[in-house]
Amino acid sequence: MLSTAPALRALFSCLIAWTLLSGSAAMAAAPDPELPEDWPDWLKEAMPKEAKRQKATTVTLGDDAVTLTLRGKVKDGPTVADFGWYFAADIGATAPMNCWVFNARNYLASTLQSIQDSLIAALPEENEGAPIKLKQVFYYDAGNWDVVPHMTSEWLYVVDSQPSPKIGLLKGRVAARKGVTFTCSHNELGYRKSFARVFEAMITDAVINLPREEPYFEEVQQFSANGRPVGVVTATYWKDKDGDTYTETHSSIMMQVDAGTLTTSDSLLSEYSFPDGSLINAVFNAAQNGEESVDLVLNPTDANLWEVSGQFQGKTLKFSLGEINESNAPLSTMGQVFAIRDALKSEDDGTARMQAWLPDADPSSFISGQFAVQERGKKRNTGLLSMGPVEMQAAFDPDGSLLDAGFEMGPLEMKMERTYQAGELEFTPGE
Image (cartoon, rainbow, N blue to C red; front, side, top):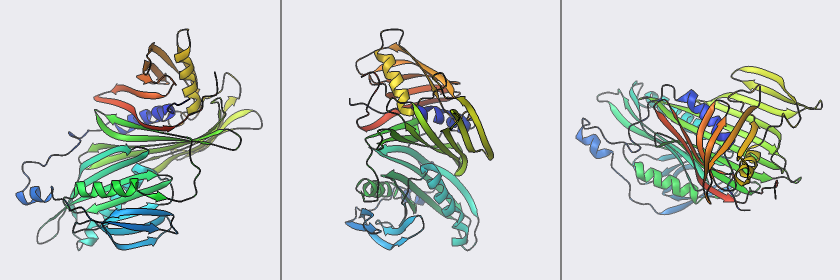
């Protein structure tokens, strides 16, 4: 049965993360920034500057591990590093484009934030010790190119150098594809579209030969606040030799707190589940502003108990969530889809009841939730979705996969929407 995989578990986790991130969040006024009227003419002329399209060259990383098609020329590298590879490229601007390629799937928001912060911190040393007079968010974004999630941040800065201040625009982008994380930066006024175009083409055309099992299902969800993209979630499904499903759900969020601050939240939920969607075990990792905040494992014990152990916000935890039985049985991400699908196809009141482990909300218990169908359709079914303290209007396709969901939180209108799916999710129960 062709379907789309859910990101329900990611939805609830990220809604809670949004609550933590957005208490003082001041969303930028426009997705594409406009230049202030009081800027000097030379700065207004420099910002729209773009490079001519460059001829394509091939960049090979490792022993043909990654092959990139670069619209430009390599100026430095590629060099091998502990994390993977680094190289610098001429993309037709004055300053080079610097790229770091990680041979692992990293946190997107944290990786981008870490590199941008380090580059900004190095500015005084690069300018004879002159202090940074201004650091301001110019633009940020999140989304996907089909199955490839990506994020962007751009910073306008002023270094108080002599005889005159230096004004710059540091642009950074990060994306993940087939278990590899790509991050590039460009530090020069203007060239915003040129840098974006070269980066996207390089990632989407990349040939990756690192060892990796091919998933049987992939899905991407996009988060937005007041219509502006602020985060992205990917859910990837693999089948093991026993017929069980291994799922990785990555989520990354970036929001603006004030003129000079972006705050980030990343998480990874790794699950094993039986073909009927019941949970076997799970691992949850999360980071706030690049600092690891959660590292928890949920496992069944020999005593037939659910046990949680690990680190949670600086504390070491180990406790039981009770006996494993029918009334204390959390569903995996896949299992939540099965529950929604069965409710949509039922002839009764159309209510799905479920339990889930949401450690970023409360690692000490399973949280109960439900979906109550309000209106059925051939392609879209709507209803009220709740999980713990979170309640929202949501829409699902006939197979039980989330199409979109949203709710209001203070001045922010939050929304999650499916933007990509590929493969076939195997619905075992009820067939």
